[in-house]
Image 1 (cartoon, rainbow, N blue to C red):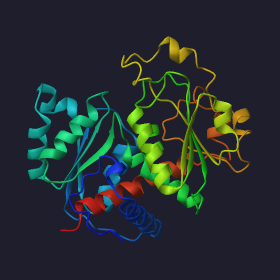
Image 2 (tube, rainbow, N blue to C red):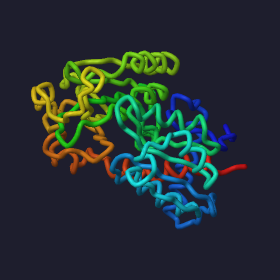
Image 3 (cartoon, helix red, strand yellow):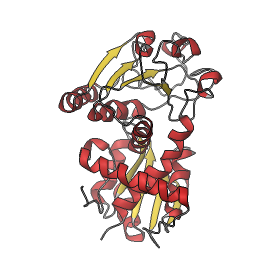
Image 4 (cartoon, rainbow, N blue to C red):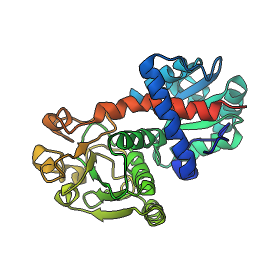
Length: 327
């Protein structure tokens, strides 16, 4: 088991070995058991983490705030619109100062073409771990919880058929970071991943190439289709979720002709009937109910979204314990 995690940045799981990810999962499961039994876990007593948010959050913010409290530490929530960042302070200066004030910096910045670069610049100068709470390219916290949830339900993930499917939504132009992170991680655990989306909602070529390499090295697979029925057929896990057409169209406008032409991309009971009889429905939440998915599906017997959401706190605690603990 890998044990040296102190001050290790958590920006993408691509930069963590499979052994390191397995350790994250082991710690997540242990912390979940302790939480269920009411066993105290003061692994980060008196330690402080700064939570910088450029966007809104429910699960990510609360899993981090509650998680650090349960570990004996404290979170400072920072709305970046009220920080000197709003007046142009650099990522370098912010990272250096916050490093001297505490023990970890976590940040959500999903602005297209900006978010990941901002996190990388902070990581270059920080002397504490920098944790990605979602950027324009990656959402490692979410996909770690997704993997934990799948492994809870299915002990052997080898050849598990997982379909990541685009779905119609109008709430906002969503980042590509969730599906991108899923296609990179799941094949590393031997899963057969199908990525389905309408023409124009492509993920970056470099991400597809990395996902294919991950699959080849670990006995998984990746295929791409533009037919949603094909993606549902025989699937053991379906993850129908919207993402924006950022790669082909960087305009931040939510509604555009391409989006409106694909209203039929929706998770319905009819679509679910094409999948394996024991298929599991997952979603990172919040779901755009009525558009992305029928209530009868997300609230139905195949849905495991609340187990998936709960695991956000256990995996968040594991990441903080390993990267902020130790030395």
